[in-house]
Image (cartoon, rainbow, N blue to C red; front, side, top):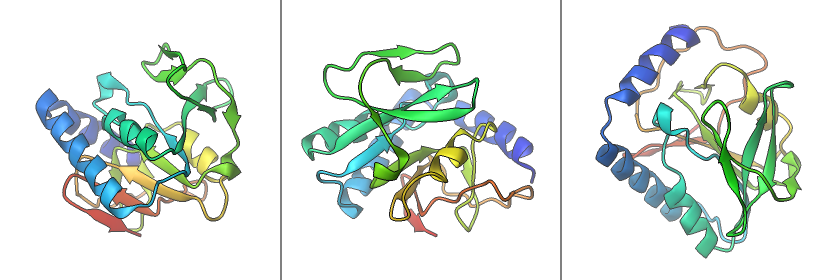
Length: 187
């Protein structure tokens, strides 16, 4: 399938999830991460979910990371340049929802891509080699390509399906793992 077809189908599939299902799945994803990755005192990027698109609720993960003394940042989208910058956040950080429905920190220091140990990546679908389908602007591919060679990319997804993506290109960057409510897949 083409990314555009996958994008449409998976957005619709996500819409069928109830609030309870989304939270239960998000908690299971967080539990799997906690049990399988050493996040203590690491530098970590965690996206904040776009509610209208039913993304994985990362609030559970962020709460765990705070207890693990991780250095947490979240992306801020620059739609003019189609780039992400990542801003450190803590209990004093203010957040706003931008015009596209993305919650973002509005204050805090920037963390450079090469400083991250882990990056948690939103996605709609993934294939058997770790290439993902996002929303089509390439924000994460550009960001991930600038991360350090030891940075671990972990996709979060409600669904276990590994789909065939016909239109992967040289600018796409695969993730190393995907975590679903039912399993962890390493690529």
